[in-house]
Image (cartoon, rainbow, N blue to C red; front, side):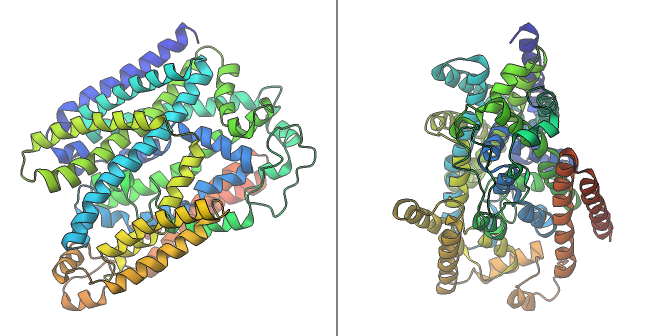
Length: 581
C-alpha cells in the first residue's frame, strides 16, 4: 500500500460520509422517512440498493470457498434462490407495497389476530432484529477482517479495532441519514465495488501463471467448469492442488436439495420466500406497486446475472496461483491475489471497493434491524404514543447498540459459508408458511410460530444424533417442520374473521380465500394465477439463461453462450409485453 492507495480509500470514505450528512435532515422528519424514505424510492434506486446490500465483503470470499470445494457448480448454494426471487417479483412485490406497513414483522398483526400474533410480532422483532441480524453482520465483519489481515499483515486484535472503527463510521451515517442515505450510498458503493472486482478478474486472468481462460482450463480439471454437478468427479492429474482432491464434488442429492427444497422452504436474508427483510423494506419504500415490481426485477437480474462471474473467475484463478493453501484457507486466495498482483492505485481501489461492499451491507442491516426493534417492539410494546422525534431518536440510539452487539458476535464466528448454512438450516421449513399466509386464509399465527421453532429442534437432532450433513439435512428438517406446522394449523383456531376481512379488503390477494371472498363479494382481486405463473416461468428462464449464457461466453463456448443470451432476450421481451398488459 502506497500514498496513492491510501488517498483513494480516504476519498471514498469522505464521499460516503458526505452522502450521509446530505440526507440527515430528511431522515429526521419521522420514522417513515427514516425507515422507508417516505415511500418514494424510484425502482432503480430501490433495486440497486437491494443488490448492493447482498454484495458484501463476505460474498466474493465465500464464492471462492465454494468454487474450491465444488467447482462452479458449488454456487447452486445460492443460485437456487432464483426460483424464489422471481416468485417474489410476480406474486408478492405489489402486495408488499399494497400492505402499507413499515416492516414485514408489522405485517404479522395485519394478517393474524390475538395474543399469538402479538407474541409472534414481538419475538420476531427481537429474534430477527437482534439475534440473526447481528450474526449476519458478524460474518460480514469476519470477511472484512480476513481482507484487512491479508493485505496489511496486521494482527487479529488490531484488525478487530479497525473493524470496530469502521462500524462506528457506518453506524454514524446510517443513524444520521436513514434509508435515504443508505440507498444513495448503496448506489455509489455498488458501482465502485463492481468495477473493482471486474478489474481484479481481468488482471488475474492475464497473468502468465494463469494464462487466461484457456490456461485455467488446462490447469484445472474439467469438472471445475461444470455448471451442474456430475455424478462422478474426474480428479486425475489434480493431486498438486492441496486439499481439493478429497472434497471436490457436489452430490446429485445435494443439488436436488437446492433446487427442489431450499428456495421455497428456507428463510435466508435477501432471499426470503415471499419476500421479506430488507427486500420487503425496499419494496414497501418504492413509489408505487409498479416501482415495487420493477425494483425487485432489477434486483434479481443484477444479483444473479451481473455480479457472479468476476468472483468465480477470480476464485478459479486463485486455485492456480495459491495451490498450497488448505481447503479451509482457500477463500483467502482472493485477498492474497489483491495483495500480490495489483499495482499501486488499483490496490487502493480494490480495498476501497471492499469497504464499499462491506459498508453498504452493514448500513442496510443496521437500518433494517433497527426498524424491527423500534417499530415492532419499542413502539408496539413499550411506548405506543410517543412523538415521531422520539422514535427517530430511539432509532439512532438502537443503530449504535446493534453495531456494538455485532462487533462482539464477530469474535465467535469462524467460517463464512458455515454461517450461511446455519442460517439456511435454522429457517428450513418456514418458507412455505411465509408464502401461503398471503394466499391461504387458514394459515394463522400458530402456524408461523410452529414453523419458526421446529427447525431448531430438527437441526439439533441432525447435528448431534446423526451424520447427515448439509444440504441433505434439508430433506429431514423441512419434512418434519412442514408436518408440524400443518398439524398445528388445523388444531388451532383460525385468525379472527374481522382481521381476515380487513386483510382481504386491503391486499386483495386471491388464491384460497373462498370463505372470506363470499362475505366480501364487492372486493375484486387482480390475482391471475395462469398469467403470473407464466411470468414466473419466463423470469426464471430469463435469469438462468443470462447467467449461464454469460458464463459460457466468458469460458469460450461462444455459440452456446450467445444462444442462451438470445433465449434471455426473448424471455425479457415476453415479460415486458405481459407486464404492460
